[in-house]
Length: 378
Image 1 (cartoon, helix red, strand yellow):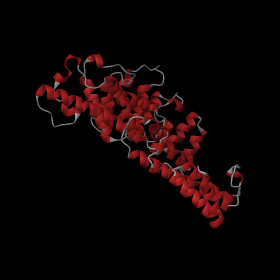
Image 2 (tube, one colour):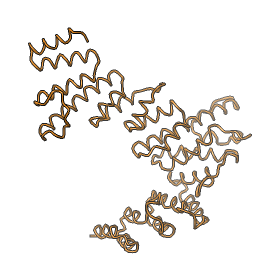
Image 3 (tube, one colour):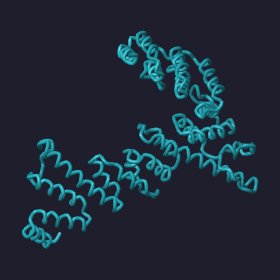
Image 4 (spheres, helix red, strand yellow):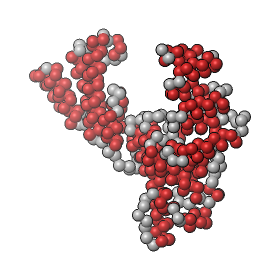
């Protein structure tokens, strides 16, 4: 920075006063795109107006309530300005440091939404997905930059419920789309024309030859992983595509029919049955399928997974009475914290069965749930 700049600052202060000096600094830092210093200049101006030391080192908590409120408002405005300028220049990571400081993610989420996948987006993915600024878009960037395998691993490790449904939808769409393109390519080569349908079910219908000689069209381990994730979906379109993936899996050669954990020992057929229930198709037959799984399960099996799956499925259908009966018959001795499905107490609450909740709470020595039931019966 030239000596002339320092002289210009002094001149602005001498001829126009403190505000003229701060305005000069702001213009200069904006012209130089030195937004961090612009931010600091705005804070210094704010401190000057409040009669605080210009080079301030004390925490804002030591200020009076009125002064702190004005100081924090100035901080927020300065952060928005600096962050907005970085966004205008396309520097999302540096913009995020300012917007994160004031708890505002929407401007950064909107900027990320407009991005196309390119190399070197690790910092953007970290902000979008792992810091949950725009999880769905971040997950799309993971898929585009690193592929399905990396995306599956990332999704498996993603603990938050925020954005999880949207990311699951993106994952199922991607794998489904890859399978469609691979099937259409093989059919075109064999039949000489490209089928119009882009539905997996339509592509494999009547074409047993697709599965001859142990042929497969996408990584079968990816199909298995996506099917396992898909059971938590609440989106009908996603569930439908997952069911088609399961139907495709059932047509694969036996060597690809991996054995899973109960009640999904037959990975493809058992997931197809579960998904049919969620889609409202063949509900009773599919529920009978899982009741049979429960009947055949080892009663000493840790966690009673078949019972938990059936309880969870019945609860999602709103069939709480049946779910309660299964829970009491098979899961009564398990600590609720060990359950991957609603407990009997939670099922009673969901169903509004407060008399039964009261009785059950008394049996279990659960004073808090007993009180909750009594209060809700008034």
